[in-house]
Length: 476
Image 1 (cartoon, rainbow, N blue to C red):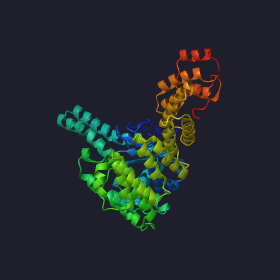
Image 2 (image 1 turned 120 degrees about the horizontal axis):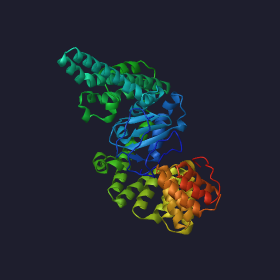
Image 3 (image 1 turned 90 degrees about the horizontal axis):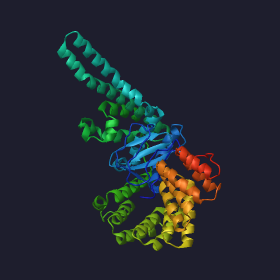
């Protein structure tokens, strides 16, 4: 948890523009279905949780004819119960995970969102507005006619009620879309060999949202209005499907509980100490307590519990990751190196675990360690080239080696990936001045300048400096 945050910029059309810090506002592109995330929501990176979510949603995307390997999982730190799917991306809030009782409930909500995507609902915001606008305009038109006919009271009533009739029409259109997404989600779950029971049960748990005043509802249930008729129609459908009685596997249930415990430990440490008391000796409970002690700034208590868990599960890379993270954040960098190395050894394909190791190595202020740290960060970037925080670490490492040109180029990459084009351009221009002319890194700096809308004056100055000004591809 709290691994380097990843920013997704214009480098790929299937990515979402996000600021590359842990406490950021999310800027979501229009393709995301219905869900809106509030300013202050956080982007969370955690390999263990992302893997569980990928495993949960992969068969659903596959059933929809979408390659699950091309799906980006975005974990949003928010108390809101919310989810959304768009081309190449699945967004899930921590609130949704913590409120789901089992994997099938979570899969049900994700299937509903993929149902929106498969139905093209993400791109029908204009239809939704039109659905409310037409009756509103017609009602106002009737009001105008009534006024011309001399029926002042009737005219006033019609004009006043026009927005109400528009809202009713929009609500009806929204419910129709939601019902279609329910049915599409149920079909995808069945095609995946999964039960639709979880989707019905999740919605049924929140049936009370239907009667709450709007400001008291979860945002998800304002965007996805529930009704008893809708829930019962879905219930009737899924009960007739062959896989309705399909149960979550023991492994899936265990992973779900571990995921929730981990989130609780990080997000709600004080609450976790009561929720997972010392009498509970299950792995998720002890994992949550270890994390909670770490979050409450009691590293020795946390490390003692992590060591016990490692002794039981010596092949679990995430326990070594946690141990290394605790040691690093409490300024015990030399001790953090070994567990970070072990986590990478056990899971060499994780970009985030490599980034953690690279960060630890460059913090040791040893030339050989810094050199190795740079290699680890570069390996991480070959897997996630748009992880802005790793670019920032790399800039720090090059600065420690006295390589001004590379430090400025890495900073330009960082600014580029968080969408700050002006700063990206300025650092890229400075990088060009210190890099070997026409080298690959010099050309990359040139590319960043050219795709960041330079002024004519800046272009003339670059031309006077010599070298090619042809723009290369926007990514490495």
